[in-house]
Image (cartoon, rainbow, N blue to C red; front, side):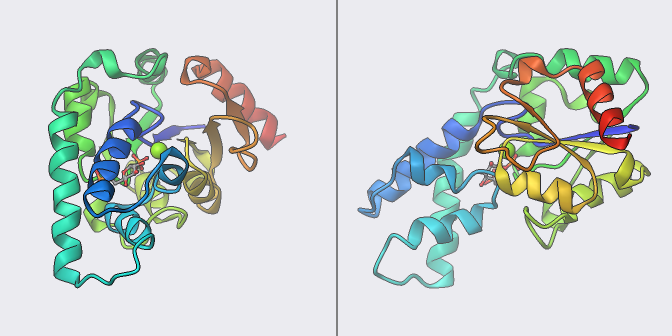
Length: 219
Ligand code: G16
Ligand code: MG
């Protein structure tokens, strides 16, 4: 194990609630039903893919230009929400883990589908812990495709087999596994079935747990 690659939303901080509120506001404006269950489908996937799913609730059709406007509207609202993010919004145990990884000389990267990822890391005051932040604008295939995790590993100069990926969404776990990495799922066993290691909360993550689980799989 030489590197750990993190998802952002649901692993480092819980921006999912803000995504939910922003999509809900847009959906309501369009007269579309929207609830937490439906929102689960939007976790880990890109803004435009999320919009397509929201609009699939609609009978009408939208031009590409209208879709871009709707996505921008959602993002504007989302940005007003994440402007309030502070270091207190880090999920439990994450800063401790990032420190442990640094001290042990492991490399770290961020593989988030969010175009707002760098801004959020700055607000959380943890950007300095990351050796690389994948620029999602350069990624052609979103999660569950392995491209984003493979890009992170390549940028770090580490073989995928020596990387651990941490995710909270099913599409993200699939992306990590397809990249040939060790997959850590944050969530319930039912949702994280395919993960190599499942933790109920980020609080349970530690360097020693990652190392021992990684070694066990390799044996
Ligand atoms: C996050 C969220 C998704 C969101 C995506 C794109 O991914 O989980 O719900 O649609 O980013 O975000 P933005 O609209 O800010 O570009 P991740 O990969 O950090 O879990
Ligand atoms: Mg996530």
